[in-house]
Amino acid sequence: MIEVITGILALLAGGFALVAAVGVLRFPDVLTRMHASSKVASFAGALALVAAAVDIGHVSAVTRAVFAILFIFLTAPIGAHLLGRAAAWRSGVDRE
Image (cartoon, rainbow, N blue to C red; front, side, top):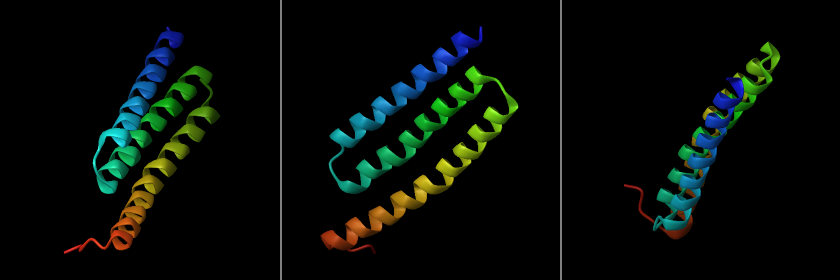
C-alpha cells in the first residue's frame, strides 16, 4: 500500500513539474513564466519530498522532508519576486 501511495505522489510531482515546464515555455513574458516556475515547481518539489518521506517511513526522514518543504515554500517566492523586480528594472517596465 505504501508503494502505491508513493507512486501516486511521485506521479503527481512529475505531472506538476511538467505543467511548470510547459508554462515556462508557453507563457509570453518573464513575469508569468516566473510565476509558473516558482509556484508550480515548488509544489512539485514538495510532493516529491512527501513521496520520499512516505517511502522511507522513518521519523527523521519525515522531519527532514518537512523542513525542506518549509525551506522551499519560504525561498521560492522570495527568489521569484527578486528576479521579477530585476527583470522589470532591466527591461524598463514602469512598476506603477
